[in-house]
Length: 313
Image 1: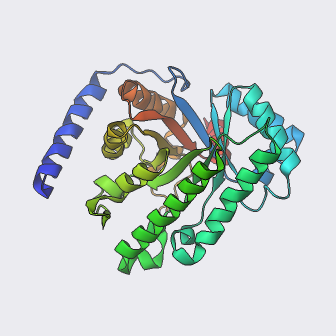
Image 2: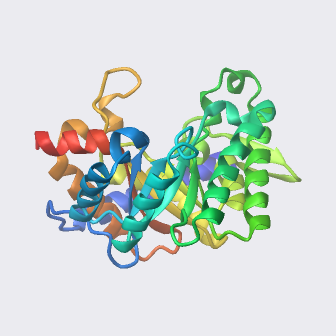
């Protein structure tokens, strides 16, 4: 299919989406993780959110109150120093029906010279799981984002290839470990459907970078950071359709950080539109995609700003 046909197909899909959403009667209500769908929350700062029993209690209460059943918790530099606290967090989360993923990522891990660092983070998690068989991490999310590197501007193909190689090495180590970690990668929505999509040619195939990522990992979380359900869905459909075609799943991410006019413009966050409006939009996302085999749920970024949004509601 050529570029013109792709754009025509995309515009047609967006038109159908807009019509369907306009017909849906959705009221502002809490977003529920029901019908087998996931509702996840990013928590990057372990020390801020879960460094002792009291903080763990507050965090789990928050997750339960908002029907969140998947926690992405930062482990980089903290897991080796706080194994007992992570054990408590995971044990108590599991008792509440909440899965826990280790959360790690640096952009330069995409580069071959830094692959060792990315693998070391995985090995720490695998080692923890081996030492704590009754309180294992359920998965690991890598938020690497190679597109933020300066090298990506001039050597897009090379950086993309190196990025895919580290994902393959991670996947291979997980498989060899016989640990049933879910391997998740956080990716931006525009790798496949942006104005300047990232098309990669490797192994005799030419397709969007996000499709190659889906070929390797178990699931992806698309950072579909927009402030309406319609735009979140439209920006994620290429990956969701592709995921369904190969038996994989996609989580759709939403941003709650306050806009700053530069790195976080109004259009990419729900912060300025309020908690109730965000719930309405995320319910719409879930209802619209509920029966799509490539859709697994939503993920909200992140804990401190979501709490702030609620306080301002």
